[in-house]
Length: 313
Image (cartoon, rainbow, N blue to C red; front, side, top):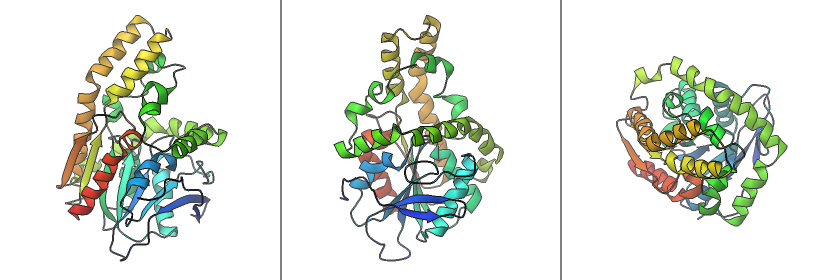
C-alpha cells in the first residue's frame, strides 16, 4: 500500500493561464503502454477526498490526483469553473505534465459531467483506457434526483453534513487524512472556490445534454466501464433526522423529503445504469454501506473498480 500521509509536495504544472497542483502516487510505469489512474473530484471537493483510495491501491500502480483551480495548492483560474472550462484545464494539465500513458479515469459525483465534457473535448481515443464512476452524476440527474431540492435544503439548514450522514463516524481515512480534509474545507480559499462551482453546477447539466453524446453510444466502444452506485437514502435520512430534531421544515416539506428518501435509491440505480451505455463492457455494483461519498466510507470498492478495469484491459 502507499503511504497514509496526505500528499504535501505536488508538482505545480503551468497550463498557460495558471498552475495546477498535481500529486503523484506510486512508481513510474514500466512501459508507456501501462495504464495509470487519474482521479477527478466532485463539485466543491479537493484531491484530499481520494486519500484512502490512493493509499489502498496496489503499490505497483501509478496514480494521480490533482486540485482543480482554486483548491489546495492550485492557483485560481481566470476562467469561470464551468464543466467545459474544467475539462479544458484538465486536458491542458495532462498535456503539460505530461501524462502520456493511457488513463483509467476515476470520477465522483459532478465528475460524471466533467468526464463527459473531457471526452467531448479530447475525443474517445486510446488516451482513455477505461472509467470508474463513483456515484457519478448522469446528465439527467437533476431532473430525477436533485440534491439541491429546496425542501431538502430547508430540512438540512444548519446541519453538519458529514456528521448527519454518518461519514464522520464511518469514514475509512486515517486520522491524519481526515484532519487534512477537514482543515482544507474550512479555509476561505476552499469555500470561495466551492461557491463558484456551486453556481456552475446546475447549468452544466443543460450544457452537456445539448451535446447529445448519448446519440454516439457506446461512446467508449468496448473499453471497461465500472459503475459504483451509493445509497442516497442513507445521506438524506441522516440529514432528515437531525434536521427534524432541530425543528427544521414545515410538515409539508418533511412529507416531501420522506418521499424523496423512499424513492432515492431506485432512482439513483436507474441513473447509474445509464452509464453502462458508454461501453459494451460494463459492470454495475452498489455500495450498500455508503451514501454519496463512497470513496470515504468504502474506499475498497473504488479500488476494486480500478482492479476490475485493469483485469479487463
